[in-house]
Length: 218
Image 1 (tube, rainbow, N blue to C red):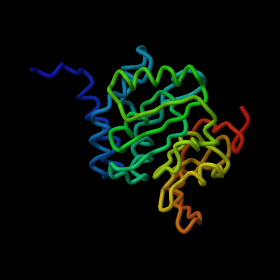
Image 2 (cartoon, rainbow, N blue to C red; image 1 turned 135 degrees about the vertical axis):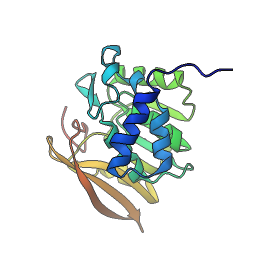
Image 3 (cartoon, helix red, strand yellow; image 1 turned 60 degrees about the vertical axis):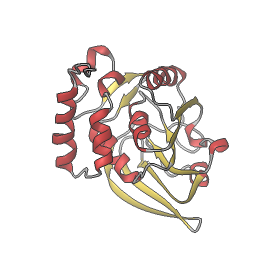
């Protein structure tokens, strides 16, 4: 049976080669996932011609789908091997969720905006992401019923590490999140070792605000 023609296959491959490989994204599993996941389906139809450009795009509700490079970088920093249970804070369009679903055993994703959550859930189901669970809630509180998590990814910027998220991170686990003020942040890698927090920075970034009890007000 012939594979259906995908007019976005070449732009997707070019995105990986020009935006990711040239910027030191070296994890082959991450690169393969980025070549596979159809980013154009996660944006409005009018924006699909720009889906593989080197920039974020609006998805409604004053939210964005992140620049492909940032998605790849944050995913690479998680160092996923395929056996992990991942908590994602900020489902948004569902694109990052779909990338994680290619690389982890189970993905639990929280979105505070019901309309975005419902749209992402439907698209992820359509794409056959059977290892993903999406729910509406406050991301800064995490998902206690599913904890602990081997990895946590936060796709919105806050002033620090929300205590519930660190509590729900497994020993030897890793969290990647933007930390800073409401305008500019530093991408930060947090590891739990002996119950203690170890942090290192991985470059500048700019995300929408993380809203909730341990972050910014709406």
